[in-house]
Structures are given as C-alpha cells and as structure tokens.
Amino acid sequence: DPKIIQKPKYLVAVTGSEKILICEQYLGHNAMYWYRQSAKKPLEFMFSYSYQKLMDNQTASSRFQPQSSKKNHLDLQITALKPDDSATYFCASSHIQDTQYFGPGTRLLVL
Amino acid sequence: QQKVQQSPESLIVPEGGMASLNCTSSDRNVDYFWWYRQHSGKSPKMLMSIFSNGEKEEGRFTVHLNKASLHTSLHIRDSQPSDSALYLCAASMGTGGADRLTFGKGTQLIIQP
Image (cartoon, rainbow over all chains, first blue to last red):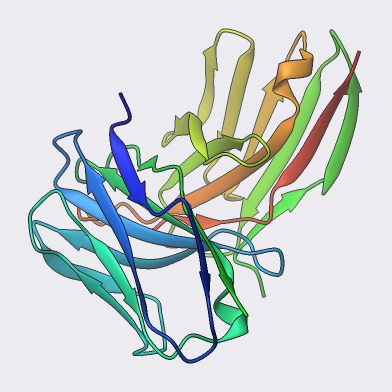
C-alpha cells in the first residue's frame, strides 16, 4: 500500500488557471514538505511544515500556497499558473530531522 | 551558484565495476548529507545518509564524509544494471526541525551490461 499519496498523478492546466495538488501521508510523520523538479532545475525545496505549522519557505511567489487541513495532509494551491510552473511536484514527509520519504509526484503541465 | 555540487554529471560503468560519485557543499552551515537514488519516472528514494566524519558501509554501497571540506562520496561496488539511475546528493543543516534538503543536480549513472 502506498504510504504517501499524491493526487492527481498527471495534471494539464491552462495559463492563468488555479490548481490544487493533494498530498496525504500514512507514515505517522510530523513533518511534511513540498519539492519541485523540472528539466531546467534540480530538485528544489519549496515549503516545510511541522505539526501543521509553516517552518520554512523557499518559494518567492505568493502564487504558491500550502494548506494543511489535517496533520497528515499538506496540499499545495497554485494560482495564476504559468508555463514555467510546469514540473513534477513531490510531497515528502519525515519524523523531525530524519529521513525524508518522497511521494510518487504530480506531473503538472501548463499550456 | 549551486550550493551542492555533484560530479561527474554522468558516468558509465561496466556491470560488476565500481562507481564513484562525488558531492561538495559550499554552505558551511551544513551538518548532514544524504544520498538519494531516482530511477527514471520515479520519485527519489533515500539510499544512505552520513553525519559524522569517516565511512559507512551498507551492502554494496559505501559513503565517505570529510566534514572539514564538506565533501562526501558514494561508491557502489559490483554495479548492477538496476543501479542505473540519477543519484542525488542532498545537504541539510540539522537545526532540529523540519530541515530543508538542498539537492545537487545529480549524477546520471549508467551500468553497461
């Protein structure tokens, strides 16, 4: 059974639209993260949450908003989508200061 | 400038051979190093981690760390075709919290049968 679920697996969006990427983890971890990987850039950190509180934010744009409704959920809302946002978005989770486990990813294509 | 530099960018090793991958951080605040492996189309999976000076071995994989130079290396002996993947080095600061991982661009390893 997958322990980190990301939905959807693939997403095609038009420029200017808004999408929500879903992440749920069933590993009992208290920290969750978002990372992004594209052909142009290496795997890069976006946000980290611990006990549902934002701990660290590397994303300059306010178009990216993490949302934590439950302690094992960390969704990512992206507004005013741009073609440059096309990437694979990985959710990860861990115990504090321990190995981060990555979900299968959501592959986003913005046209 | 990339804070975590990996070399080489790509590496071809014959099956059964030894693969050696390198990684250096330019951030002196870094405390922990992680090696992840990512097969094509899949998510990264943690392979090994190292926090102290010296060497750590797990099966065919050995990792070295020199904290003074912030250099780590991963060695894979008796390489198998299934080892063909993107190897990502990551560094974190060990703040005691939900630390961000800073990744390098990776080394693409190809094991030739």
